[in-house]
Image 1 (cartoon, rainbow, N blue to C red):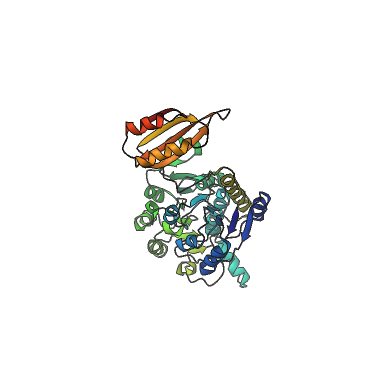
Image 2: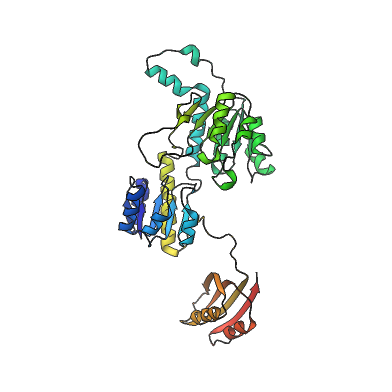
Length: 400
């Protein structure tokens, strides 16, 4: 297959794909119209991206495109609806960068407590101000709040507990038993986490339900001087509410992400939050360690190879969870040419819309079983005609 890497893919991944026989085009600096033109020219079957935004124009530029691999966990930068309408699979690589993001979260925690960036900036400017910087509070014994306990949230919990911190957490999927196994106190809501913690860190996916999860009420629930960390997505924070908390409540923030991040790799940055004295802003580098990039690249290679070998897409994120199928037609038949074609012709005549289909071959390849899920009105006469085919052993119709 032809694979187009529109972001920098670790060398391990490029070599792995080429060793598997794929043609790999690497264009990490292509963006916007240049990327559209490159896709039109190269016509890849697979597109691999990291932070690159993928829109419908890019998909239309390459009608051959079958699979988009997000070399990371979040896939909100990809037009999922557009890909689904065009029959393009989207897969991600969850959990492979969890340790890296957790490490940055802890780095931001300690940087905020010790004011490390300001320390360094003053020293480089030739200013000695030990009296100012020798007033850190310390984190041992403090309460760390985690909002979102997925792969990254769990890694963060393990690390901050190692610093001697008490942890409170909320996640839609967090149960009492899971909280006990992680050694955390389960809270009833994100607001309860905000109210109970000295440090609050966000680790939720960017979906409509989490848009501006950290809103004015969230920041109002915090105690004055709370440390706030966001290494997930800028869209989960209402930045107007955050600015209020920075100015009025003495909240200090470590941000690896923010709304309206630049789409380019290098260039000017004009973000008021970056200039706020209570904010340490990094360049969306949470997953940017060599360890994380190697692990993610290896997973991207696995996904692409699996798809190329057997047509299955691991970690696919845009398949319908529950298809509109109303019935299951099971047809046991002789494994020979033309039998399934005859069955599907009857399905067509009955105006049954096939939603899912598989054909399983029995040992010895003498017989097989077709399982066809469809949306349509059941018709015993259709089943009778299928059963009457000389090479059909049995046919069963089951309502779903």
